[in-house]
Amino acid sequence: MHRVPHTNRRHVLKLLAASTAAPLILPRRLFGQDAPSNKITLGCIGVGWQGGSNLDSFLGLDGCRVVAICDVDEKHLKDAVDKVNARYQNQDCKGYKDFRELLARKDIDAVSISTPDHWHSIPAIAAANAGKDIFCEKPLSHTLAEGIAMVDAVQKNKRIWQTGSWQRAQGLFRWAAELVQNGYVGKVTRVEVGLPAGHADFERSGKDKPNGPAPDGVDYDFWIGPSQMMPFNPCRFHKNWRWNYNTGGGQLMDWIGHHCDIAHWGLANPEFGGGPDDALGPNEVSATAEFPAKDDAWNTATKYRIECKYPNNIDLVIAGGYGEIRSGAKWIGPNGWVWVNRGKIEASDPQWIRDIQEREKKGDLKVTLYKSPGHHKEFLDSIKSRKRTLTPVEIAHRSQSPGHLGYIAAVVGRKLKWDAAKQEITGDAEASKLLSKKMREPWKI
Ligand SMILES: NC(=O)c1ccc[n+]([C@@H]2O[C@H](COP(=O)([O-])OP(=O)(O)OC[C@H]3O[C@@H](n4cnc5c(N)ncnc54)[C@H](O)[C@@H]3O)[C@@H](O)[C@H]2O)c1
Image (cartoon, rainbow, N blue to C red; front, top):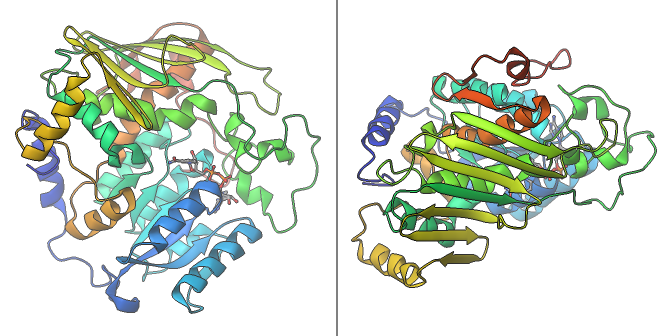
């Protein structure tokens, strides 16, 4: 069956429920009846580094028309609007500083959200409530509680959601997950997720610049939004916001939505792993981390190690800065191991890798995973079919949850008991408080 492991009955029922819950009569404006050439109409919110790349991907696809851009930096906004208008050879694309004005437009079917992490949940929930389908970047949310609220909003409004966890659209990652889901390593006992350590200076700003005025054309108050107000500092601004806990989550949260997402994908067959990937969660989490001083501009953990116990006797370790945990995802079982990273796949028996590709082609695998036509195209396809994407909101939320929990365990310095069904930390009030953050007024979810 399309995208569904044969053995995963609960997952099938859930998918069927999701698809039958979709409206039988699609809104008139869907597929851009109000738009040029009957295409899906799209608004892009946040057009910096990744937002620019997502915009390019959508501009390259015939099935959609970008009609609006929103950014709180006038320069980013103007560059993106100009790019869209040049692409379509007209002046139809409108620019907005406030995403609420863009979302109020009834002629927009879907949005792409590529704002910094602290600015995912509010526009995403507002978009779901406004009836838009949503492409949103990883990690799903800045806090675990925000992720729960996003899942609720998307489910309640029956929206199509794709997360920017594009690795699921790539052959190497799919073959790795198929090898594990088809039992090549046997029943998985251990999973290793290797992520980067330290910080990377993406803006060549350095990390020791003095505070100063925000650049002309930047609405810094809006940019800070629901996070705590801090003086403007170029080291904590575009791209490098991820190295300060006020706006990002460091390397751990920057990468968890990629490699931990793939690790969970491999485990999505209960016969060999831990259960449906969108219901996966550890029941114990302990962690250590090295944190810079709290008031450093870049105060996110430079080295970390999170040890999780999953149901079905699986140990899952997430580490940054530990050489023995290779970057990528590795599954280990009684028959051997499979490891994958960008551009490379390896297995204890190299023949498995040729085997999985041949068997996938022949169609004789017990579990065949969906072969994406491209991450952005798949989103557009799902908007039309109303079928779940490869990276729906529930999955993205579960992929990032061990990262949020690991951070909390490292801060409180003790093991957490996690009830993955209720999504609650058991018997630890101090740790439970860290599942959410107070938002700066007037922002709230
Ligand atoms: N999928 C991937 O491979 C990938 C790669 C890089 C980044 N990302 C994710 O993409 C997101 C953006 O990261 P980035 O590196 O592009 O950051 P960035 O700083 O380069 O860009 C963010 C943009 O959002 C704008 N912005 C901020 N607040 C806004 C608001 N309230 N409304 C509208 N615009 C707003 C900023 O002005 C900026 O133009 C992050 O969540 C990041 O984790 C994903």
